[in-house]
Image (cartoon, rainbow over all chains, first blue to last red; front, side, top):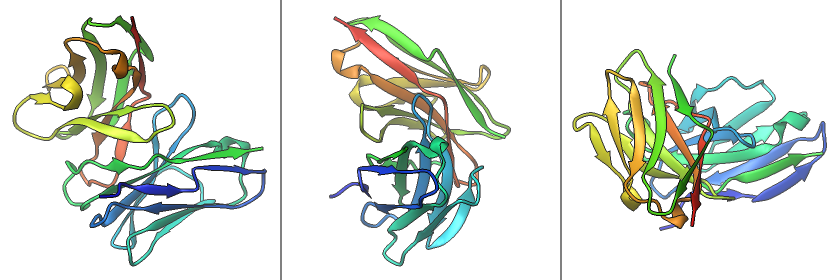
Length: 115
Length: 113
């Protein structure tokens, strides 16, 4: 079975531009989470979606938004890009949201570089 | 609020030596704890998880971790390091609502031949 897939793998943008990152969860997984991992740090939680609704949001500005589609795939959008947005963006899926013991399965991420 | 502290940003061991990666957590309720490994240019892979029950948790690749409530610790160990264990390791705690996983800053493990 295919794991979590993310596209594109690498992306270069300039300040002020907008970017859309995509994620396809493992088949049957209904929950998708997004994380930002700055070089040398642990992943920071951005969003979690379950059944197409936002269920959790981290401490990120409104420039960050996301959505989940009927097939449970998800997009992360970032507007007005800043140099500090340069990071590895990770998508993770899990079977359900209920029960904090559900481990998340991670994709390989999208490396976003802002010039 | 829940938090995770990993002691030591870098750990270096010789091949065949004991691996010990330290993690302390802060939580007002019984936590769910995880260890993940990240190889270069890849996402995170789950090594093991603690939910409830047995305090010694066995994971993949010979790793195990012991949950000690009195010390609020969840240290990761492996009896004998292998070159392929060289990677970044993250300790994480899941909040009770299941909405997010909070990660530590990570510990990079170096294995010397």
